Amino acid sequence: MGSSSWISSSLDLSIRPLQAPDEAPTKVVESNFMELGRTSSGNKDQSSALLEELNRLAAENKKLTQMLMTVCENYNALRNQVIGIVSKNAEREISPSFKKRKSESSTNDSGNEIVVNRASESSSTDDDDLYKKPREETIKAKITRVYYKTEGSNASLIVKDGHQWRKYGQKITRDNPCPRAYFKCAHAPSCPVKKKVQRSAEDQSVIVATYEGEHNHPSSSLLEATCRSNARATLDSVPRSASLSSSGPTVTLDLMKPEPETDVKNSQPKVDSPELRQFLIEQMASSLTKDPSFTTALAAAISGKIAGPYPTEKWL
DNA sequence: CGCTTTTGACCAGCGC
DNA sequence: GCGCTGGTCAAAAGCG
Image 1 (cartoon, chains in turn blue, red, yellow):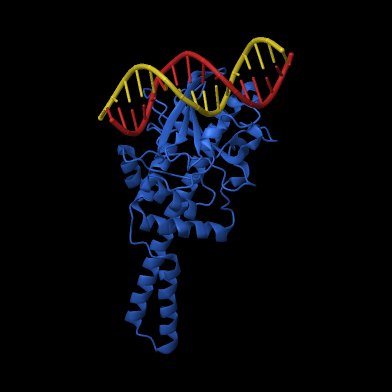
Image 2 (cartoon, helix red, strand yellow):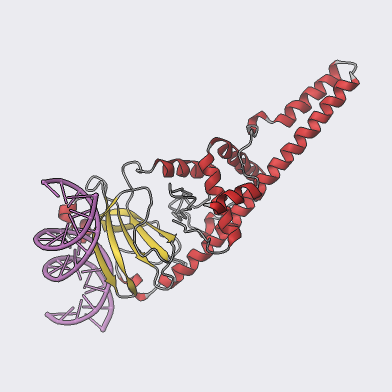
């Protein structure tokens, strides 16, 4: 809780009346100044005042731009770090038993199991028939794996992801002493989404949640919805969500695959292009000014980056 | 009393 | 075919 506020202030992420990008204050003043130079003989006082104003605005604009670029860079660094952590966990999980079941997660060609958002045959639309029908009749569903960092003392497998779930089973699996819990969306059977939650075998403070299918209804958490929409709108290449829980500035690192044909490797932030970088900055500025929760989430994420590989605060 | 969670049993897929 | 394992069901227990 506290760290997000200090990081917010130390990085000066507080919301300011940032000009909308399309208003381009510096250019407006500059243009007026040029016009003034052309149309009048030149009131020197007025010109110098305008020049001063121009310089001031330019400096402010530069400062704000640099601030946002810093935010971008911090974010990118954080993201790379998270990808590293996830890679490590994913490598651990590529065990024979993990590859065994046909419909769960077969490793991709590169052998990198970070990406877990793909078609599968493991979900049925009809709960009553699911138990009896041959597996071949099941429909394809998206598989998404999400890693949650939890406090060591928290032994529950409850994952606050904005949806309501009903637990329908629990199993001890062969390769992991921690039990695996099975959940269905509380909106079932109208919503076919299921999830499996299990602690990582080696780092039990990390919870691995595997989602199957997609919700056909809005999330019960408005906060998450807001944050997701902002995160998706502004950071196309970011992990799919940066959500807040009401209990504090917790960050959900949701490494869903943005597009079917992309994976985490090639979804690295592409801010090399100046135009794209500028666009990203502008979008971030827009979001920062419009949504305080986004600012808090970003601040929390950056605080995690500064605090170390595992933020002192739980991820979720 | 109704809803949720727990838990033992059952079923299907897979390897041998 | 058999055994192992993961996934699911459904009755019982727990809880507000």
